[in-house]
Length: 328
Image (cartoon, rainbow, N blue to C red):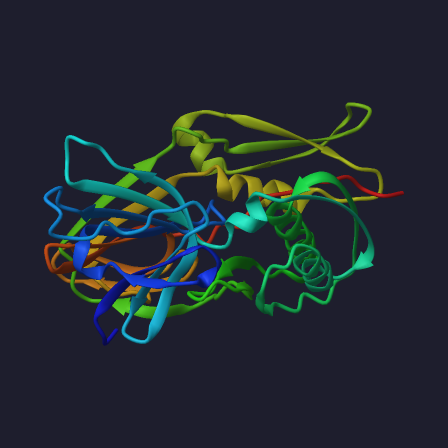
C-alpha cells in the first residue's frame, strides 16, 4: 500500500493531536482470529536530556496508526510505561473492539436477526457502526450479563448454523464496527516470502464422535476411520436434543479437532493481509502452495523496514462462540 506510515496521539477529548511518528523505534500492529480487538504496541525513544518534549501520555488518550491517507488503527491508549533508567517508552493500545469486550449487557431477543441485535447494542453503548452483515435469520436467546462481543458472535454463529455462512467482527481503521461475511475465496496472492515454517499436530486429536440421547442411548457414531487406523480412537460425546439431528455438529467437531496443519509465513509488509481473509500462497522457494486462511497477522515497522508475519491455516474454521440461554 502506497504512502508513509504515521503515528499520532490524540489527547483526551480530542483537544490536541500530537504527531509522534519521529519518536518510534518499533511498532507492532496485530490481530488473531480468536480476539475481537486488534493490538498496537509501540516503543518510543524519548531522550532524557530535554532535547525532545515528551509526548503527553494521559489516561483517555487515543492512538492512531495510518498508512498514507488510510487509518489502520484507532483505539484507546491502555498501558504506558516509562522508566528513569531508559529513554524507551512503551505504549500499548487496543482498537475500539475494547468497547465490545469491556462492556457487558443484559438482553433478551425474540426472533431477532443478529444485525438488528448488534445495532441495538451499539446504540445503547454508543459504539459507531460501519456495516452489519445481513444474516436474515431470527434468533431467540437470552443473555444475562454477557460481554457484547460474545453476544454478537453467538447471534451470528447461530444464524450461520442455519444459513451456512461464517462472519467476522472487525473494526475499521477509523474505529467503527464492521461485521462482514467471511470470504470463501482468496483476496490476495503471496508469491515471495522471507521464510516459511510448516507445523502439523495431533495434540488435540479427536477422531470419533458418539451421539447420545439425553437418556444415555447411543444414536450413532461418526468417525474418521483413516485417522483411527493411524492413531487409535479418541472420542468426543454429543448429547442430541429431542427432535434434532446432531450429525452436522459431529462432523464439524471432527474437522476442528482433526489433524492441525499451520504455516508461519514471513513476507514483505502489506497492510491488506489481515486475520480472517483467504490468501493464495505461491512460494516457489519453499515449495508450499495453495489456498490458506489467515488465523493471525503481525505487522512490524522497525529501523525503516516493514514486514508481515502470518499464521496460515489450510482450513477455514468457524468461530465456536455460543453463550446465553435458550428462551422457551
